[in-house]
Length: 280
Ligand SMILES: NC(=O)c1ccc[n+]([C@@H]2O[C@H](COP(=O)([O-])OP(=O)(O)OC[C@H]3O[C@@H](n4cnc5c(N)ncnc54)[C@H](OP(=O)(O)O)[C@@H]3O)[C@@H](O)[C@H]2O)c1
Image 1 (cartoon, rainbow, N blue to C red):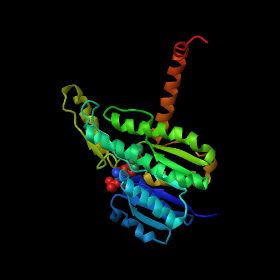
Image 2 (cartoon, protein in one colour):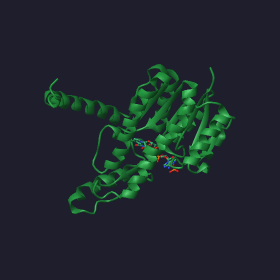
Image 3 (tube, protein in one colour):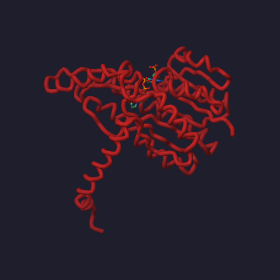
Image 4 (spheres, rainbow, N blue to C red):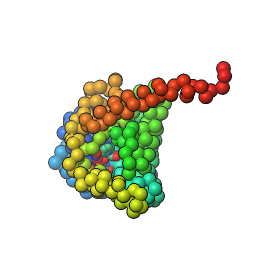
């Protein structure tokens, strides 16, 4: 079988680095690993066997997106798996969050993913095949205080991906959302700005923001295991790829609890909800 070409955003650290390292060891993979600063991809040099390309890519830069897609096709002739992994966080109460910082997070987490996907879709449509893997979060299903806008980005990714999946299903293009709980990456540390509450009414949330910062690199999730699971899903379960894949025990438990609770609420409200229509 022909090699699959994988294109991944944000491979300097965390999930992206784990994925790139895992895929770099596979004979059936052409790997395009991208990062804002290409020198942060030196860790791939020990694997360089002609099937690996390291490219500079800031997902907020349209020109760089275009050139990465072009270079990928020139090098390998196809794009089979796109992994929209690049992302950041932001801790702060809803009222006190910095508008510009939050808008930038939407630029990366939502618009970066959208622009990457739109740039790759013409190739996948032409191939009549492709897999788009979008990093959401368990925070794309369930919300905590001090992360309102991060949740906003991930719920956006969920809705966009679910709709897109239906539009491209007949073209043999699949979409999978990855919904991790806490994983040992740079996310809770350097990749998440923290705005400590100044308003007295919100002081109770200071501790949880500090706790998240201090908990960075002690999370339960292992990004190397996530990489192996994602590769296995794509390689051995392509025909029944799930739309949503929670990763980590907390994510697995929370997803089930969220839908169980929501189902009970929606059932309780069902007749009232339905009664709002015009009479038939
Ligand atoms: N770790 C968790 O607990 C967790 C849980 C749920 C979801 N996630 C999601 O997992 C994804 C990966 O994050 P991670 O946990 O691996 O954290 P990470 O170690 O901080 O990695 C984030 C990656 O995104 C890159 N990035 C940030 N802004 C970018 C931009 N404008 N253009 C291109 N790349 C950019 C970073 O590059 P630089 O090195 O240049 O900053 C870095 O490579 C994110 O979407 C995150 O929301 C993480």
